Amino acid sequence: MRFDPKDAGSGALFLAGAAFFFVSSLRNLEVGSLLNMGPGYFPIVLSGLLVLIGGTLVVRSFVRAGERGMSLPVAVRPLLLILAAPVVFGIAVTHLGFVAAIVLVSLVSGAADAGLRRRTQMLLALGLAVFCVLVFRFGLGLPIPLFPRWLAG
Image 1: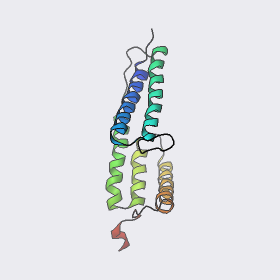
Image 2 (image 1 turned 60 degrees about the horizontal axis):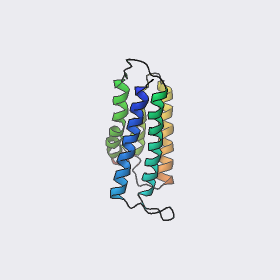
Image 3 (image 1 turned 135 degrees about the vertical axis):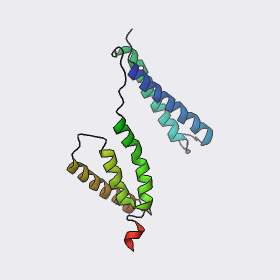
Image 4 (image 1 turned 180 degrees about the vertical axis):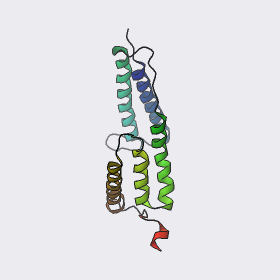
């Protein structure tokens, strides 16, 4: 029998996440019915989809052969940069405003990809900032300060 530990591990993570959200939704939210959905209905449906994905991956791990002695290499620098991006956003949005926070987050997370050119990274950061301002400030009407208060005077 062939076994792929990467698929089995991924499937197990999906199944664990599904179990967590399913139990959490059942305990803390009202589920309701199909015609009268409560706030817990959607997380339970998503948990079911995660079970399907996780189950498929676990079954596939027994069909598809993995490499023997396979180890999962972890690229530490990109991992740390991606994990730091939400922290940078949380700090920057309160002190520098929404626009600067979006630009900083895209530059930090873009630095995780060593092959991304600086010009492309800057264009993506500016485009993402414009898009986020249009969606969150003007589209949804969220009261987020776009620029720092000290800049306004």
